Image 1 (cartoon, each protein chain N blue to C red):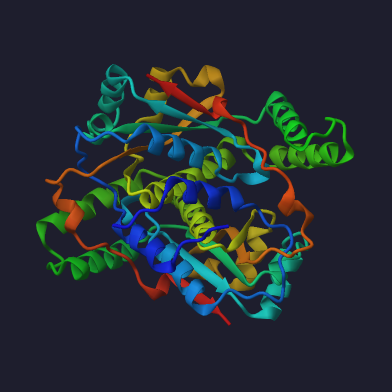
Image 2: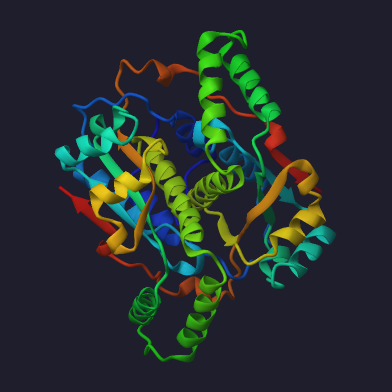
Length: 214
Length: 214
């Protein structure tokens, strides 16, 4: 356990902004990118199901295709890295089995251990009770929040992208056949010096968004 | 700009876990809590709309009432702090006006400045094109992800809570009349020494969740 000072956290969160213009010449170093991928993998999710895949698109022709269905936003091709956040359309019995096997392996327990079979029952019931795609899509946004904050802590700029055509993304990336649905995307890299938005003050509602019941 | 080392970020993300048992005697210091509230306020959201309120429930009688509609989970009363994440049911014209006024104030521009009126048009169109409650609920999960990561960076334990009855929360807290809907909750504090789950290895799918298109 090695926490950071409050001021350092808030300083980086204030430094973060939805970067409008990336410097295409500045690439995220491999070691930094590996840490950001690991932060994605470490994202918490409901029941621990991790109902997602993170598609890291570095192929430039593919980026051009995606840009065309992202309102032509320049960040899609200019940023160092592009991540498409895809949610499982459905939590299939196989998904749940794979997850249980992963727990058994991590904990060095047999798959039929009572603590695992009890948990499995709970996961199946919870999953059956919720519209899977929307539940999973919400979990994706935990990953997005964690990713943007983690990047800010490492001094990497990001911009989340909801302005895209999810069905076209699915088509281009062949996601439907994989039981996946594009939910949101996020680019990462370094702001261009010419980005005039970087210097604008952050706009936030102040205290009325936090209400204390004491 | 004062970034942290990769290892420190990943160390804190690995240290984080969905805390099952909190030490009721350990309270988050006021200064640390103020930083966590500020991290919530700094959360990014689509169009910057911040379509949420964060309700910090410190009243112990209210906590007991909420626990009863949260599957009786002990964390609801044991943790130092409880935050209910409530999404706007609808982005009303007044909400959008208030937001525009906030931008004008932050940027020291008149409300009828072309850059503000152009942006307002885009926000109204975007908001009209999406089912507001679900769109806003997804944004809430960005705040949840940011909050859990920020807390981990400060050495504060958290546990997200989806196992609750949102309609009962809304009733107890009088949220519907305020155009708000309970989406998720999260407790924060410090893990109890007796929490046997704290020592369990984290269960994560490895590389198959990150797919690289090169």
